[in-house]
Length: 422
Image 1: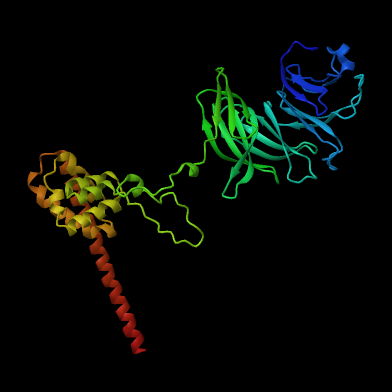
Image 2: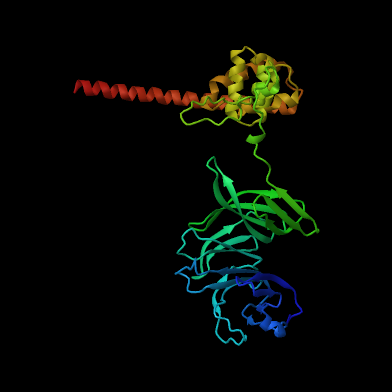
């Protein structure tokens, strides 16, 4: 007892006669359940002090004579995670029965950087090395070497709220039924994230996740690793079970001809090594103006191309209309609102060398079709005036260039004659 504050985590020691507890008072207490200590049941055998805030999680690492690890000089270690943003590693060896213990038992202090909500110990693939310690706090997971205090990996999970629970699960993957570890995290955002685990270098990577409607406070895994129990803040307990193999439920007999199953047979077959796979290309989705051209709606095709504001697309549609002899149809019977975009495009790009040969013909057709209705719209009249000004300016520039070319030809010819005479 010794404290009226909540106890958040309890762990059994290997002997089965001692219990380690931690809670909101920030202290770790070791309790003895032996008959000799029955008279002192209300007094802790050992009290470990050091945390400055509530302790939320507690894990134990204990070795036996058979699996003694030479790299770890201790037989029993405790790791505690607290709201003071730290993780402390404690030595639980050689605890006196009378509880009179003055030695310093805190071996190292690890800084998670955020309030620690959960801890998890994972075995190391290298038997001569200590186990991995995974801590969860905030939106982050960290992987530690608990003895050296080195942070091996920092994993920014895809949680949007605090991670509240951390659990490990074994899964069977691949055709050879290889067993791998998966690390599951759950948080107040209602998400359960599943991560792959590499026991060699202590690396974590996100695999996939599950979205729930309620915030999650705790997780537990069944003994056969086929069931996942989820506790929520609303008081509900959700149980998810791994379903049977899909291949085991497939029908063995051939489907009847003409049925949907017969039509879709072979879609789930996995090719073997050496098989030739014929890839079926998906049908390319047509642009809106391509679809209008396919339906012979020439005016709509030109309007759709103009809406893209891409000169290459507009010119491509104009060229296609010219090949189909549908350019006159696309430019005719337009009101002020539908005539303005094509006229503005012609004014803007008629002087561009790559577009001029096509747009000169478009300008001729526009003048022929709408030259007789000038004076009815100020906007259209203004655009025709701009077109005339742009054409006139371009003609002046072209004449200047032709004169320059003529002068250059005369100079080059005179130079060639002089070099021949010399």
